[in-house]
Length: 253
Image 1 (cartoon, rainbow, N blue to C red):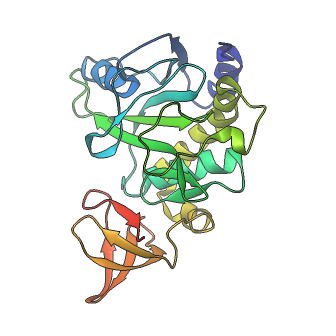
Image 2: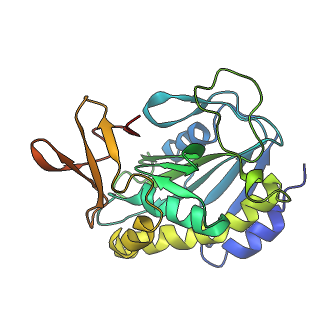
């Protein structure tokens, strides 16, 4: 597979001095690898790409397996020190969606969907370096995306694939298209927080004004986000703010 690593490095390195791009044929999980490196004191900005992941992870511990050519699996790791981490996954979603296609929507808090089908997932983790425990935390932003339709059965709803929208774009070209806007957005979030991304998120908000069911069984209607990225849900008890650490949210059937 052709990976434009040099072009990605040239686009991103001016924003992240010391930045490197690594492409591996196979790894258990790009997020797990960068998290371990950070704990070992290796905190240089890194984009780690896997042609195949054998133990990829989604939010809440869900498995995510990547297939060479059919999917894009990568993690961006970098030291990050925002005043408030709330809303980072939404800012990342905005950057990726805007880089690719107008029809891509963001399902709070960390998925990209097309026509009510999941296209991609975002998993953000942070670690402290053992060498600099008081320094900035190391953020690892993992993204898994279906470039072509996943093979096999067993899906209650068939996932979306990017080739439905951009049929001529292969995984390497997708990554090149995403990389610099993603870094620009993460750096902007570090400085300004989620507030500058709020309107851009709401323009692509999949759940806006839809009936939703929270993971604790509560039902209500989604009404956008707060300036900190919390989901506003109008329930029988009134308006509630939901944070990503508390629930998962699915459109009501």
